[in-house]
Length: 517
Image (cartoon, rainbow, N blue to C red):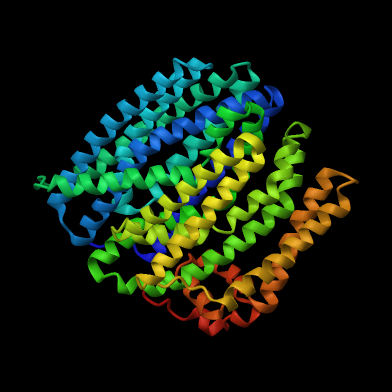
C-alpha cells in the first residue's frame, strides 16, 4: 500500500481548490446581497458570527481532523491496517465529543449577544461539521481529497445560494445560518455513508495504539490551528467589533474576503499534499521530498507576487462595482491588504511540508511569532485607526510569519527555492501585469466602473500571457516538473508558464509518460 502519488495528489488538490474557491465566490455573492439588502451593519454582524464559529470549530474540529488525517496517512504508508482500524475509531470519538463542546460554547456566547438565534444555529452547524469531518478525515487519508472535496463543493455552494434566498425572502442573518444547517446535515450524511462502505470493504480488527503520543500531537495541532486562526484568518474582526463599529467590521470583512479568495487556490493545492507527504516520508524518507519542495517553493513565490499585483490593481474597482459606495472604505484599503497576499503562498507550502512529515515545531514557532505581532499591533492600532490599523496588524503578522518559517526551514536544511534573481524576475512580471491593469482602471474609471473593471482584468491577463510566452514565468526545468504533475488536459498551459522555448516537438509529446510517484 502506498500513499497518493504526486499527480493523484495534485488532482485531489484541484478538487480541494474548487471546493474552496467556488463556495468562496458564492459566499462573496452572499455578502454582496447582505450588504445591499440588509446594510453594512448587518453584514458586520454576520461576519462576526461566522468568524467566531470558524474560530471555535477550528480549535476543536479542524485540529482533530488534521491530526487524524496525518497519522492515518502515515499508517497507510506503513501498511499498518490494525493501527488504521483503531485510529478510525478514535477519530469518531474525538470528533463527536469536540462537536458537542463547540456547539455548546457557541450557543453560550449567543445568549449574551444580539442575533441569539443565529448563534444557536452556528453552534448546530459546527456540531454537524464535526460529524462530517470525522468521516471525511478517514476518506482523505485513504484516497486524497477528491471524494470529500466534490461533496463539499456542492454543500458549500448550496449553503451560500440558500442563504441568498433566505435574505431575499426576509430571513435576515438567522436565515443565512439556517441554510448552513441544512447543507451541513446533508454533507455529514453523505460522507458517513461513503466512509461506512469503505470500512466494510477493508474491515480488520483494531490494534492497540499508544494514546499519549496521539494526545500530544493533537495538542500541538490545537495550538497550531489557534495560532493560524490569528495569523491567517480574521482575528482583527473581533477587535474591530469590540473597539469600533459593525460598519468597520463589514469594511474589513469585504476586503479580507477578496484576499481569502486569492490565497485559497495555492493553499488548497498545498494542503491537499499532506497525506502524500506523510506517506512518502514514512516510506522513502524526507530527503526525497526536498527537490519537489524546492520547485514548488519557486512557484509559490511567483503566485504570491501575481496575486498581490492583481488584487492591488483590480480589487478596488471590483469592490465598488459589486458592494457599492456604502463600502468604499474597503476599496481604499484594498492595496494595503493586497501586500499581505505576497507573503502567504510560500509559508503555506513550508507549513504543509513540516506538518506532513509530523514536525509541527516550525509551524508553531512561525505562527506563534506572527500571532503575537498580530495581537500586539491590533491592540495598539485598531482603537485609534480602525480598519487601517486592522490591515496593518494583518500585514505585520504575515511579514513576521513568513520570515520566521523561511529562516527556520533554511536552517533545518529544507530548500525553499528562492534566490535574489528569482525574486527580481517575479517582481518584474507582477509589476508589468499589475501596472497595466492599474493604468486601465485609472484611465476608464470616470467613464464606467464596470468598463474599468473589465479593462483592468483584461489588461492584467494579456500582459501576463505575453510575458509568459516571450520569456516564461518559470525556468524550463520547473515547467518540466509541472508536466509530470499536471493532468494531461492542463499541460498545454505550460507553454504560457514556461514560454515558447518550452514547447515540445510532436515526437516528444507522443513519447510515453515517465513513471510518476
